[in-house]
Every structure is written in C-alpha cells, then in structure tokens.
Amino acid sequence: MDIKVSIIGSGNVATHLGKALKNSGATVLDIWSRNFENAEVLAKTIGATAVKSIDDIANDPSDLVIISVKDDAIHDVASALIERKGLVVHTSGAASLSDLSPLQNHGVFYPLQTFSKHKELDFSEVPICLEANNDDNLQVLKNVATALSQKVYEVSTDQRKILHLAAVFACNFPNYLYGVAQQLLSEHELSFDIIRPLIAETAQKVQTALPTEVQTGPAVRHDEETMAKHQKLLQENPVWVNIYQLLSEQIKKSK
Image (cartoon, rainbow, N blue to C red):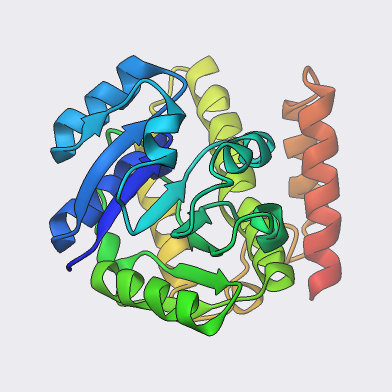
C-alpha cells in the first residue's frame, strides 16, 4: 500500500494499528505520544521515528495522520494540526466527526475490537468503521481500510456511537462479570480455567444465532429456588446481589 502515515498516540489501538499498517506495506513515518518512551517502543517495533514534538507531525510529509488518543484529548491534538492540508482522522467510537471539523480534510477510522498491546490478533478480521467530510477523503480511508481488513463499513457518527455503546454491553460489561466469576472461584479455591470452555462456547453460539435464541440458565427457566440459593451465596456482597437480581429480572422478561 503506497501511503505515508503518521500516528499520534502509543496505546493499545495505536500499537495494533501501527503494526497492521506496516504489515500492509504502508510507510509509518512518525509517532508522537505524550509518553515519549512509549512512542519509542512502538516506533522501534514498526520501523518509524518517534518524535518529541507534535509540531514535527504537523509539518511532516505524511498523507494521513491518525489520532489515537483518549477522547478528551482529541480536540487539543487537532488544534495542533490546524495548518495541515492532508487527511487527519481519529479512531474513537464515541467522538464525533465534527470534533475534527476545524481541519480541512478529516475523518474517522474506527476499528471495532478490544485491543491489548501484548495480545496479537488477526487484523484482517477487525471491523473498521469509516466516516469522512467528503467523498474523496472517504475513498482514501476505504483504500487504507481494505488493505488492513476484510470487514469495512461506512458508518455515520450517530451509528458509530450506538456501535460503541453496544460494544460496551457486549465486551466491557461481560469482562467485568468474568472478573466477578474469577473472584468467586478464587475465594473457594477453584480455578478460573474450569469455566473457560463455558465462556468460549457462549461466545461461539452468538456467531451463528441471536443472543435471545441461545439464552440459558435459571432465570430463563424461571427457577426461583435456584436463584434464591445463588443470592444467599452472594449475601456478603450486596452489590453482586443487586447485579444478579437486575440481570435475572431482565432475562426473565426477555422470554
């Protein structure tokens, strides 16, 4: 892929995106991060240059600048790039396209996945959601995205915000519940490994069916006796009791 890219940020998304760009044949020129050491680590990994000032990226010859920072920092970063004529995008699921509107050419390049720096994944399977301020910029983003992934979607700001919210329900909240399960098991000298196959099978089911079609457990069976026993076991943690009750009631209502 014949394109020169600069990256602002060195976190989980920036790391995976930088690696994917390199593997696709793109040239990653510069990386700037508020943590210069992290920028150096990523730059070394993908053959780029870590720069100490965002001004270095504001004036570099890259075709595309990718802002991959916390949402509340996007505005400040964009302000530092105000003179750029080339395309600038952010990778946020919740921030609007208009957050970059002061820039002449801007867009969104949102990879919808849970990323951890040290956990490798197949980027070709990562959905990439795109938006841009004009058709020409959108086409540039499509060209980049299709070089990285088989799953590319044009998604509006409003749609992307719903996607991000859905992702919190589908990923972040279940992961918290995995943590609750792990703590319960640990307190009774049981290994989390015992339920890993259950977690994997639950996730696998919804690859071919809708969640409501494969819901199991005592709540969907309206097994009040079992649910009462479960809540008794949780009585030392009222927060978990509340979570159990709320989720169980919603599952019962879904059927």
